[in-house]
Image 1 (cartoon, rainbow, N blue to C red):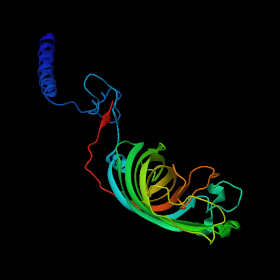
Image 2: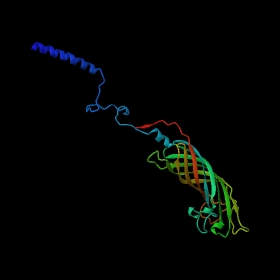
Image 3: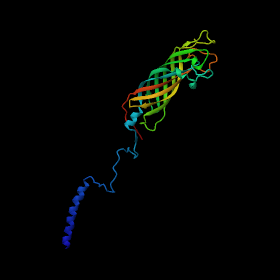
Image 4: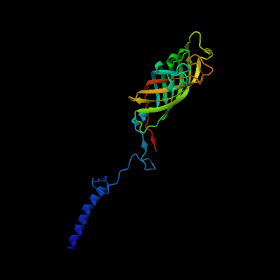
Length: 272
Protein backbone atom coordinates (compact mmCIF):
# COMPACT_ATOMS: atom_id res chain seq x y z
CA UNK A 1 0.00 0.00 0.00
CA UNK A 2 2.79 2.45 0.87
CA UNK A 3 4.24 1.93 -2.57
CA UNK A 4 0.95 3.19 -4.01
CA UNK A 5 0.60 6.17 -1.63
CA UNK A 6 3.96 7.73 -2.46
CA UNK A 7 3.34 7.82 -6.24
CA UNK A 8 -0.14 9.27 -5.60
CA UNK A 9 1.28 12.17 -3.57
CA UNK A 10 3.91 12.76 -6.24
CA UNK A 11 1.20 12.91 -8.94
CA UNK A 12 -0.91 15.37 -6.95
CA UNK A 13 2.13 17.59 -6.35
CA UNK A 14 2.93 17.66 -10.05
CA UNK A 15 -0.69 18.53 -10.91
CA UNK A 16 -0.89 21.42 -8.43
CA UNK A 17 2.53 22.93 -9.07
CA UNK A 18 1.86 24.14 -12.69
CA UNK A 19 -1.36 25.92 -11.63
CA UNK A 20 0.46 27.95 -8.96
CA UNK A 21 3.26 28.85 -11.32
CA UNK A 22 0.81 29.89 -14.04
CA UNK A 23 -1.24 31.94 -11.55
CA UNK A 24 1.80 33.88 -10.43
CA UNK A 25 2.32 35.19 -13.97
CA UNK A 26 -1.22 36.68 -14.35
CA UNK A 27 -2.79 39.83 -12.81
CA UNK A 28 -4.97 38.91 -9.86
CA UNK A 29 -8.74 38.93 -10.45
CA UNK A 30 -10.89 40.11 -7.57
CA UNK A 31 -14.50 39.33 -7.15
CA UNK A 32 -17.06 42.01 -6.35
CA UNK A 33 -17.69 40.42 -2.95
CA UNK A 34 -14.08 40.02 -1.97
CA UNK A 35 -13.25 41.62 1.39
CA UNK A 36 -9.54 41.45 0.75
CA UNK A 37 -9.60 43.45 -2.48
CA UNK A 38 -6.89 46.17 -2.28
CA UNK A 39 -7.95 49.79 -3.05
CA UNK A 40 -6.55 51.07 -6.35
CA UNK A 41 -4.12 53.98 -6.17
CA UNK A 42 -5.77 57.37 -6.79
CA UNK A 43 -4.34 59.25 -9.73
CA UNK A 44 -5.22 62.59 -8.12
CA UNK A 45 -2.90 62.08 -5.18
CA UNK A 46 0.13 64.37 -5.45
CA UNK A 47 3.62 62.91 -5.08
CA UNK A 48 4.62 62.62 -1.47
CA UNK A 49 1.13 63.13 -0.08
CA UNK A 50 -2.36 61.67 0.06
CA UNK A 51 -4.50 64.87 0.18
CA UNK A 52 -6.68 65.46 -2.87
CA UNK A 53 -6.11 68.92 -4.45
CA UNK A 54 -8.83 71.58 -4.51
CA UNK A 55 -9.62 72.67 -8.05
CA UNK A 56 -11.95 75.11 -9.80
CA UNK A 57 -13.84 73.86 -12.82
CA UNK A 58 -13.36 75.65 -16.11
CA UNK A 59 -16.97 76.89 -15.97
CA UNK A 60 -16.45 78.38 -12.51
CA UNK A 61 -13.27 80.13 -13.61
CA UNK A 62 -14.97 81.44 -16.75
CA UNK A 63 -17.87 82.89 -14.75
CA UNK A 64 -15.41 84.93 -12.67
CA UNK A 65 -14.72 86.88 -15.88
CA UNK A 66 -11.26 88.29 -15.31
CA UNK A 67 -10.05 90.55 -18.08
CA UNK A 68 -11.45 93.31 -20.31
CA UNK A 69 -15.02 94.46 -20.74
CA UNK A 70 -16.44 97.37 -22.76
CA UNK A 71 -19.89 98.87 -22.77
CA UNK A 72 -22.19 101.84 -22.90
CA UNK A 73 -24.67 103.47 -20.55
CA UNK A 74 -27.75 105.64 -20.69
CA UNK A 75 -29.76 107.16 -17.88
CA UNK A 76 -30.84 110.19 -15.88
CA UNK A 77 -28.91 113.13 -14.42
CA UNK A 78 -29.63 115.63 -11.66
CA UNK A 79 -27.88 118.60 -10.08
CA UNK A 80 -27.61 119.80 -6.49
CA UNK A 81 -27.07 123.56 -6.64
CA UNK A 82 -28.40 126.85 -5.27
CA UNK A 83 -30.99 126.96 -8.04
CA UNK A 84 -32.04 123.32 -8.12
CA UNK A 85 -33.51 122.62 -4.69
CA UNK A 86 -37.16 122.10 -3.79
CA UNK A 87 -37.31 124.54 -0.87
CA UNK A 88 -35.96 127.97 -0.04
CA UNK A 89 -34.17 127.34 3.24
CA UNK A 90 -32.86 123.79 2.74
CA UNK A 91 -29.38 122.89 1.58
CA UNK A 92 -29.19 121.02 -1.72
CA UNK A 93 -29.23 117.27 -1.06
CA UNK A 94 -30.71 114.04 -2.38
CA UNK A 95 -33.85 114.74 -0.33
CA UNK A 96 -33.98 118.23 -1.84
CA UNK A 97 -33.59 117.17 -5.49
CA UNK A 98 -35.86 118.66 -8.13
CA UNK A 99 -37.01 115.36 -9.62
CA UNK A 100 -39.08 117.13 -12.28
CA UNK A 101 -35.87 118.55 -13.81
CA UNK A 102 -34.55 115.12 -14.74
CA UNK A 103 -32.24 115.24 -17.75
CA UNK A 104 -30.34 112.56 -19.64
CA UNK A 105 -26.80 111.25 -19.63
CA UNK A 106 -24.97 108.85 -21.91
CA UNK A 107 -21.48 107.42 -22.04
CA UNK A 108 -19.05 104.62 -22.77
CA UNK A 109 -16.69 102.73 -20.48
CA UNK A 110 -13.99 100.09 -20.34
CA UNK A 111 -13.42 97.87 -17.31
CA UNK A 112 -10.49 95.63 -16.44
CA UNK A 113 -11.15 93.10 -13.70
CA UNK A 114 -7.84 91.86 -12.35
CA UNK A 115 -9.13 90.13 -9.21
CA UNK A 116 -12.31 88.44 -8.02
CA UNK A 117 -13.05 91.50 -5.84
CA UNK A 118 -11.36 94.42 -7.64
CA UNK A 119 -11.56 96.18 -10.99
CA UNK A 120 -10.53 99.46 -12.63
CA UNK A 121 -12.90 101.31 -14.94
CA UNK A 122 -12.35 104.29 -17.25
CA UNK A 123 -15.42 106.13 -18.53
CA UNK A 124 -16.47 109.11 -20.61
CA UNK A 125 -19.91 110.59 -19.91
CA UNK A 126 -22.08 113.39 -21.14
CA UNK A 127 -24.81 114.75 -18.88
CA UNK A 128 -27.21 117.69 -19.02
CA UNK A 129 -28.52 119.25 -15.81
CA UNK A 130 -30.83 122.16 -15.12
CA UNK A 131 -32.83 123.76 -12.33
CA UNK A 132 -35.32 126.55 -11.67
CA UNK A 133 -36.21 128.74 -8.70
CA UNK A 134 -39.86 128.58 -9.69
CA UNK A 135 -40.05 124.91 -8.67
CA UNK A 136 -38.97 125.84 -5.13
CA UNK A 137 -41.15 128.95 -4.99
CA UNK A 138 -38.22 131.37 -4.89
CA UNK A 139 -39.07 134.95 -5.81
CA UNK A 140 -35.69 135.62 -7.48
CA UNK A 141 -36.80 133.46 -10.46
CA UNK A 142 -33.40 132.14 -11.62
CA UNK A 143 -33.15 129.38 -14.23
CA UNK A 144 -30.08 127.52 -15.49
CA UNK A 145 -28.97 124.58 -17.61
CA UNK A 146 -25.52 123.09 -18.00
CA UNK A 147 -23.82 120.56 -20.30
CA UNK A 148 -21.18 118.39 -18.64
CA UNK A 149 -18.50 116.29 -20.36
CA UNK A 150 -16.77 114.02 -17.86
CA UNK A 151 -13.70 111.78 -18.00
CA UNK A 152 -13.30 109.51 -14.96
CA UNK A 153 -11.15 106.66 -13.63
CA UNK A 154 -12.87 104.52 -11.00
CA UNK A 155 -11.73 101.81 -8.59
CA UNK A 156 -14.43 99.18 -8.00
CA UNK A 157 -14.70 96.84 -4.99
CA UNK A 158 -17.05 93.85 -5.30
CA UNK A 159 -18.97 92.05 -2.58
CA UNK A 160 -17.71 88.44 -2.30
CA UNK A 161 -20.02 85.77 -3.71
CA UNK A 162 -20.61 82.35 -2.20
CA UNK A 163 -20.52 80.80 -5.67
CA UNK A 164 -18.87 82.08 -8.88
CA UNK A 165 -21.93 80.80 -10.75
CA UNK A 166 -24.19 83.36 -9.02
CA UNK A 167 -25.09 85.77 -11.89
CA UNK A 168 -25.31 89.01 -9.85
CA UNK A 169 -22.33 91.19 -8.89
CA UNK A 170 -22.68 94.05 -6.39
CA UNK A 171 -19.98 96.68 -6.01
CA UNK A 172 -19.08 100.12 -4.76
CA UNK A 173 -16.68 102.57 -6.37
CA UNK A 174 -14.65 105.72 -5.83
CA UNK A 175 -12.34 107.57 -8.16
CA UNK A 176 -11.17 110.79 -9.75
CA UNK A 177 -12.77 112.75 -12.58
CA UNK A 178 -12.32 115.92 -14.58
CA UNK A 179 -15.21 117.57 -16.40
CA UNK A 180 -15.77 120.40 -18.82
CA UNK A 181 -18.98 122.44 -18.51
CA UNK A 182 -20.54 125.63 -19.79
CA UNK A 183 -23.59 126.75 -17.78
CA UNK A 184 -26.23 129.09 -19.12
CA UNK A 185 -27.95 131.23 -16.47
CA UNK A 186 -31.16 133.25 -16.94
CA UNK A 187 -31.90 136.00 -14.39
CA UNK A 188 -34.66 138.63 -14.21
CA UNK A 189 -34.02 142.29 -14.99
CA UNK A 190 -32.96 143.89 -12.77
CA UNK A 191 -31.31 141.13 -10.67
CA UNK A 192 -32.80 140.85 -7.18
CA UNK A 193 -29.34 140.90 -5.50
CA UNK A 194 -25.67 141.10 -6.27
CA UNK A 195 -24.01 137.84 -7.24
CA UNK A 196 -20.96 136.55 -9.09
CA UNK A 197 -21.50 134.60 -12.26
CA UNK A 198 -18.35 134.76 -14.39
CA UNK A 199 -15.43 133.92 -12.07
CA UNK A 200 -15.06 130.19 -12.61
CA UNK A 201 -12.99 127.73 -14.61
CA UNK A 202 -14.83 125.60 -17.16
CA UNK A 203 -12.59 122.60 -16.38
CA UNK A 204 -13.10 121.25 -12.86
CA UNK A 205 -12.10 118.18 -10.81
CA UNK A 206 -14.60 115.88 -9.09
CA UNK A 207 -14.70 112.77 -6.93
CA UNK A 208 -17.20 110.12 -8.12
CA UNK A 209 -18.66 107.95 -5.35
CA UNK A 210 -21.41 105.37 -5.76
CA UNK A 211 -22.54 101.78 -6.05
CA UNK A 212 -24.11 99.45 -8.58
CA UNK A 213 -24.73 95.90 -9.69
CA UNK A 214 -24.67 93.89 -12.89
CA UNK A 215 -26.29 90.68 -14.08
CA UNK A 216 -24.60 88.19 -16.41
CA UNK A 217 -27.18 87.45 -19.10
CA UNK A 218 -24.68 85.16 -20.82
CA UNK A 219 -20.97 84.62 -20.38
CA UNK A 220 -20.23 87.59 -22.67
CA UNK A 221 -23.12 90.02 -22.07
CA UNK A 222 -24.02 91.92 -18.91
CA UNK A 223 -26.72 94.37 -17.93
CA UNK A 224 -26.65 96.48 -14.78
CA UNK A 225 -27.53 99.68 -12.98
CA UNK A 226 -25.30 102.22 -11.28
CA UNK A 227 -25.81 105.44 -9.36
CA UNK A 228 -22.91 107.80 -8.73
CA UNK A 229 -22.60 111.16 -7.01
CA UNK A 230 -19.96 113.66 -8.14
CA UNK A 231 -18.41 115.77 -5.39
CA UNK A 232 -17.08 119.04 -6.84
CA UNK A 233 -14.98 121.80 -5.29
CA UNK A 234 -16.67 124.93 -6.64
CA UNK A 235 -20.06 126.66 -6.53
CA UNK A 236 -20.63 127.59 -10.18
CA UNK A 237 -22.34 124.52 -11.62
CA UNK A 238 -25.49 126.63 -11.97
CA UNK A 239 -23.48 129.61 -13.26
CA UNK A 240 -23.41 131.78 -10.15
CA UNK A 241 -22.55 131.84 -6.47
CA UNK A 242 -23.58 133.83 -3.42
CA UNK A 243 -21.63 134.92 -0.35
CA UNK A 244 -23.94 132.87 1.89
CA UNK A 245 -23.94 129.68 -0.22
CA UNK A 246 -23.61 126.57 1.95
CA UNK A 247 -21.21 124.15 0.32
CA UNK A 248 -20.18 123.36 -3.25
CA UNK A 249 -22.45 122.31 -6.09
CA UNK A 250 -22.59 118.68 -7.25
CA UNK A 251 -24.36 116.37 -9.67
CA UNK A 252 -25.13 112.69 -10.01
CA UNK A 253 -25.97 110.11 -12.65
CA UNK A 254 -28.25 107.09 -12.55
CA UNK A 255 -27.38 104.81 -15.48
CA UNK A 256 -28.37 101.52 -17.06
CA UNK A 257 -25.25 99.76 -18.36
CA UNK A 258 -24.81 97.22 -21.14
CA UNK A 259 -21.43 95.60 -21.63
CA UNK A 260 -19.57 92.88 -23.50
CA UNK A 261 -16.89 90.74 -21.88
CA UNK A 262 -13.98 89.49 -23.97
CA UNK A 263 -13.48 85.82 -23.01
CA UNK A 264 -9.91 84.68 -22.70
CA UNK A 265 -8.56 81.14 -22.65
CA UNK A 266 -8.05 80.19 -19.04
CA UNK A 267 -6.02 77.31 -17.65
CA UNK A 268 -7.28 75.37 -14.68
CA UNK A 269 -5.23 76.12 -11.59
CA UNK A 270 -4.78 73.83 -8.63
CA UNK A 271 -4.62 75.03 -5.07
CA UNK A 272 -3.04 72.56 -2.67
